[in-house]
Amino acid sequence: MDIAFHYCCVKVLAVKAGFLPEEAQIIAYASQYTDDATEWQPLRVNGLPAIPGLRVDAEGRFDPICTAHYSPKEAILPNMEMQKKVYVPFHFLPPFSKSQPTAQGFFDYLVAPDSPLARELVVAAREKNDGPRELQLIRLGVALHTFADTWAHQGFSGRNCQPDNDIDCIEVFRPGGEWDTVFSLTNNMVPMGHLQAQTYPDRSQTTWKFTRQSDAAQVVRKNSDIFLAAAGRVYEELQKTPRAGEAADWESFKNRIAAVFSIPPTAGAKVIGALDVILDKIGLANLVEKAREKCLQKWAEAFPEVSFAYDAKEWRRLGLNGRHHRWDNLRAEDYQTLVYDYAGNPRFFHFHVAAKEQRDFVHANVRVDLR
Image (tube, rainbow, N blue to C red; front, side):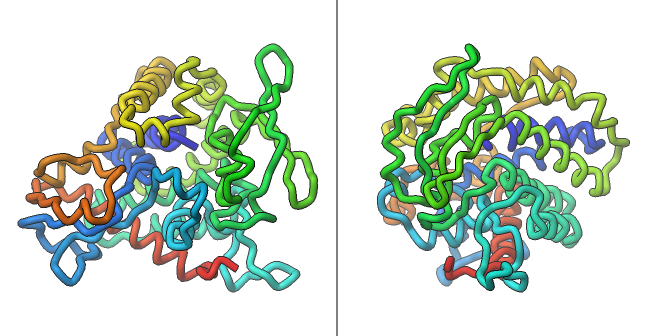
């Protein structure tokens, strides 16, 4: 899933569930920022107050929890730490805990929608009520990101594993009623996550099919239906969280969500969706931002009663005064030169507290050797 679900749809669901507008924004922002938090090395932050649960290294530097990555080299040189610390805990959650092996006695890494472990993850985030209200909402947003991904990423796993993720013969259904075969160089990429499936699992408007190499089975997916099912369950979970207002009836706005999920993107947005990582790497990140702006506009037209505004660097700027807040392309040594002053808002740091808690929860419940 992308910003269409993780931010826009979650924002609508939180507003309709009865959360205050600012609270709905925090939940939705945290949900989407889980796809944007690429900071992965310690940052020196002068004047940073003690924040319970925040990770600080031996030199007193803030040590963030990376929940996303924008590195094309992963497609060629898979990183075990990335699989264990990013893919599995935040985007490809196994369906059961390690105390529940399959009938064959092995641990199942293949993502399943609305799985028992995904439900446990959301409950854990919702019931952990220590800390300020803001932190509680951020915990919920991060957990709902992973929960929703169990629909889009079903049938794939977060490890580098050929039986799990090796696919071929991708075809996309076109409005004219024909299936088009997709020419793809990704068939030669490592079988990790949905790298070989490109971004097709994450596009709400796409109907597509592929062949799984492990058993030659053909899998057909209509993403708009899958995403709508995910939205309905996320809405149920949001209503279980204490909030100020009353929840709207799901049936009263479900069709509007279904309609916006089915709207095809512009031609330019299609290209951005497939190549945003590469574009970002070669300095064309503004094209990615424009595609996101068009997505927000589409949702604003469908839900004029909801306010949509997302900037991936907003929480960074609220928490850090410094030279710049774009770290996606930085190497480890680049972080050594970065020095910030605490800007007074802890929201960015609370996100990393919540992310650490979730990663610890997942690692306590799954096999981290990825075997």
